[in-house]
Image 1 (cartoon, rainbow, N blue to C red):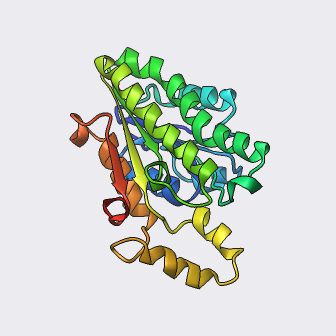
Image 2 (image 1 turned 30 degrees about the horizontal axis):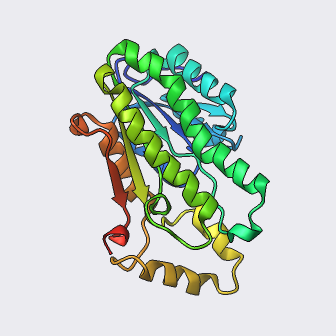
Image 3 (image 1 turned 120 degrees about the horizontal axis):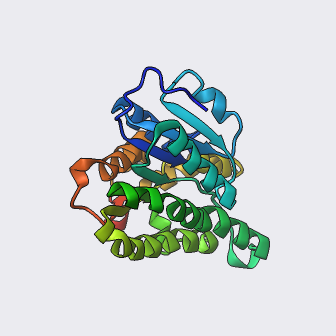
Length: 254
């Protein structure tokens, strides 16, 4: 457990899943810059080393699809920092595959990480948030959960589930002071995107083609999505709940 030395014991506390790279890593950085203490959750054990020098970050290594991971993250926040103000459900897996080539295992494993993980972590933090009078949950969906994209039946279904889940939960917990919102990124320059593209015949041409589908003619930097997450999690968004915020360079405006 990380010691709290060097941090403000009255500062807010956030749990961030998928914290070791991409949008999650940038989100941890945004929170720490604001003084928010963080429980960083990731399946990659190397995440521990990433945050080892920061007393304001505790790391939980585990699969978000497993109920015990959410339980350990909540315990880390409450035992180490005393409260939970923010949950960012960012951990996800991607699959670019036609439906006829998508196995039942593909479907189930994607649903487990992308959708069940959101359910498990949201359910786990709500008792603490409700007891302290409020909190903020920000769930990371995708433009794939808002519009139909070829070869993304399984992935899009998981991201669409996050949108429906978040809207329902926002209504359910509003009276307890908990806000629930969604960020729906377009294509973001992360390993999440780069790794599958690298397996294609001409990766750079593919990246240019993807960028051209966004009216701003580029893809997002992870920090741009992290900024949107940080806003929705912050007191500046105190009257915002049940919202789906596309951060997509104009993609869904077309």
